[in-house]
Image (cartoon, rainbow, N blue to C red; front, top):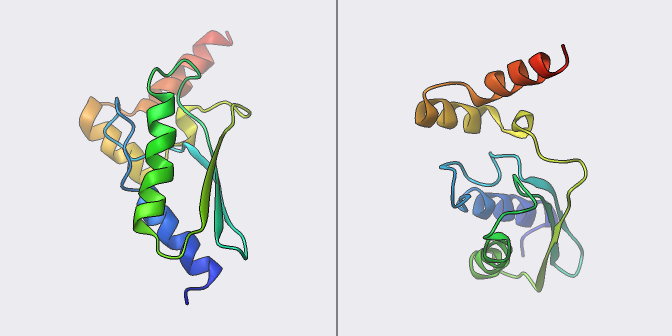
Length: 123
């Protein structure tokens, strides 16, 4: 039987296969996952956010996370996804891998552009 740490790693692998519908980066590398916990009963709790609280596909994305984990990680009893809005998501949460993927897709570094805009707004 897999250890709790091994199950957590399997959950993270699954999260890396789920993509934001509007951005070609998985939700883990996009920085939408704030926490992954697996307890001794093999219940999984995911704390995640979205790029905006007005996301029209919010319910679909949460459902997809729950179902993908249930279908792809053996031995899971229950999956609970909690949407959190504090702290709010910013591009600084994007992983280095996600940042590189976005750079290729957009043609510029989203994080640097966001930081520059923040600096301009503070002047």
